Structures are given as structure tokens and as C-alpha cells.
Image (cartoon, rainbow, N blue to C red; front, side):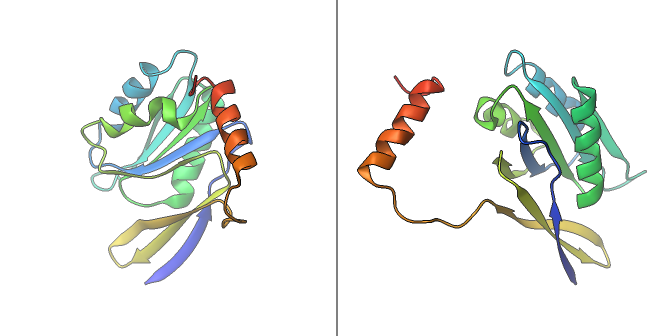
Amino acid sequence: MELSAVPIEKPDDVNVIVGQAHFVKTVDDLHEALATSSPGLKFGVAFCEASGPCLIRHSGNEPDLVKLATVNAESVGAGHCFVILLREAYPVNVLNAVKAVPEVCSVHCATANAVEILVAQTEYGRGVIGVIDGMPPAGVETADDQADRHGLLTRLGYRA
């Protein structure tokens, strides 16, 4: 077995969701879930088909994000893996809709951070075995850090 870490390429203003699904219509269902979940959302989605023609299926409403999602899916190259790139929304705005898609088996990450996808390759193909998402903790939050967190959530509209 060979292991590799595949970095996800994305601009700083883009969030990524990487997961596992299981059927050719995944890309269509993810498109619908995203398009109906958050007004103004710009997105691209790509899905690595794992049987039949084994194509990277792609869709979205923002051509540069569709292209970049496809490039990332090709780099990961793991069967049944999907990559979603988001602009003008956060993963929290769409994650429940993504997870509710019947073909979705799991979500490996949803982040704005630099992220690497850990991929294992065997004679049967490639599979995602995990992710590296962000830096290790620098310490435990203080009362001031908690106040800053609550202030950020209030500014973003997630807390009154």
C-alpha cells in the first residue's frame, strides 16, 4: 500500500467539503442540494465515479469553481470521492443538505483551512483514509478568547 497527502488547491475566499458517496447521480443531487440551500451561493462540485467509465462528473454554478473542484477531484483520484468548493457561504450553511443527499456516505472535512487529503493506494484503487485540516492547538482558550469567539459568532449572525 502506498500513502500520499494530496493538497486541496483553493483560493483563500473558498471553503471546501470533501466526502464519500456511491452513485453516478451524486453530482446531480449534490448540485440540487447546494443550489437550493443557500441564496447567493457560488459552487463547483466534482465526483470521482468508481465503476463503469470511471469519469470525474462535475457541475456547479460558478465555472472557475467547477474547474477547480474537478482538478482537485482528479488529484485525489479516489473512487466515490466528491469535492465541493463554496464561495459566498460557509459549509455550515449547506452541510446538512449535503449530508441529506441519499448517496452521501460520509463527509471527511468541511473547512476554509489549507487541507490535505490522505490517500491510500492498493491494487484495487485509491481511497481517502483521512484529512489533515489546520494547525495543532496553540493552547486553551481564555475568557478573553471566549468573548472574541462569541463576538465573531454575533457578527456572523450565528448568535444573538
